Length: 324
Ligand SMILES: NC(=O)c1ccc[n+]([C@@H]2O[C@H](COP(=O)([O-])OP(=O)(O)OC[C@H]3O[C@@H](n4cnc5c(N)ncnc54)[C@H](OP(=O)(O)O)[C@@H]3O)[C@@H](O)[C@H]2O)c1
Image 1 (cartoon, rainbow, N blue to C red):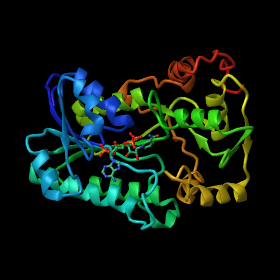
Image 2: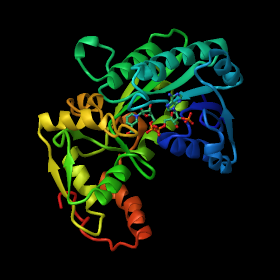
Image 3: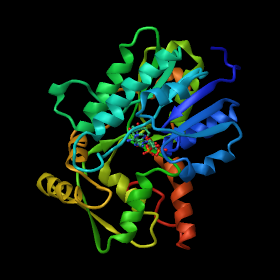
Image 4: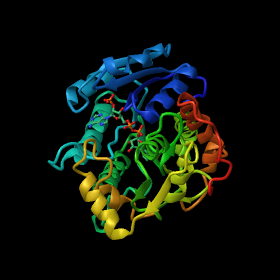
C-alpha cells in the first residue's frame, strides 16, 4: 500500500484507551475511520474528529459485522477485556476468540485483506503453559489470525500501556489518593516494561503501509523494566502526601484477589494474579522496523499525573526519581 493513500479503516475497540489515541492519529493522517461501538451516545465526543464515523453495532453478530466491513481497506481489532463480566466464565472466550473468528470471516466475505490485531505480551495458545484465561484466550485469538491464508495480518503484543487516559497509572494514583494510611499491593515484585501509547500507535500506523510487517507479531515494550511496586510508588509521588505501599506476599496476594473478585468492577482477580506470575518484559528492544526510540515513563507520566495534581490544587513535588 503506498504511503500516501488515504484508507478506509474499520476499528473495533476504537472507543477505548488505545483506540482513542489511534483514531486521533489515523484521522490526522487523513484516513477515514469507522468505529464500531456498543455505546454510540457514550462516545459522541469522538465525532469532533473530522473523518470519523461512529457506528452503533453488535459486533458479535456476524452479519452486522460483515455489513460494516463493506468498502473497508483495513480492519483493526483492539477489543480486549482484562476481566470477565459476571460469573459465567465465557467472557474471555467471547470477547477474544469468538469475536476474532467472526472478524476474520467478515474480512473474508468483504475481501478485506489487511488486519491489524491487538494481542498482549505473554499471550499464548499453549494450554500447557498454565497461564491466565486472559493470556490464553488472547493467545488463541492471535494464533487464529495468523493461520488464515490470503490475509495480511500483523499482531502487536504490548506490555502494560501508559499515557493520558490510561487505566494503569491513573488507577493507582486514584487508589493511593483514596485508600487511607497504607496501600496493600499484591504481586509487588511482578515486572513490567511499560510502553507509551503514542509508540504503540506509531507501530500500528507504520504497519499500515509496510508490507514487511505482514504475517509478523511484534512484542512492544518501553525502554525500562520496573517492579509493580516501583511503578505504584511512582504514581504515588504525584500526591501531596506520602502514601506507604506495602508489598503483600504470595498468600496474601491470592487472598486479596479472591476478595476483590467480588468487589464492584472486579478491581483485581485470581486471573489477574495468574497473569502477573510471568514478568511482562520483552526479550529484545522495541522493533527497529518502526524507527522509534520508545518513550520512558518518566518522560510522559508527569505530563498527565501533574494535571491531576493541578486539578486537585496539589503542589508538584517528589517525582524527580522513579525510586523516590
Ligand atoms: N491497556 C493496556 O495496558 C494493554 C496492554 C496489553 C494489551 N492490551 C490490549 O489492547 C487492546 C486495547 O486495550 P485498551 O486498554 O484500549 O482497552 P479498553 O480501554 O478497555 O477498550 C477496549 C474497547 O473494546 C470494546 N469492548 C470491550 N469489551 C467488549 C466486548 N465484550 N465486546 C465488544 N467490545 C468490547 C469497548 O468498546 P465499546 O464499549 O465502544 O463497544 C472498549 O472501548 C485490548 O485488546 C487489550 O487486551 C492493552
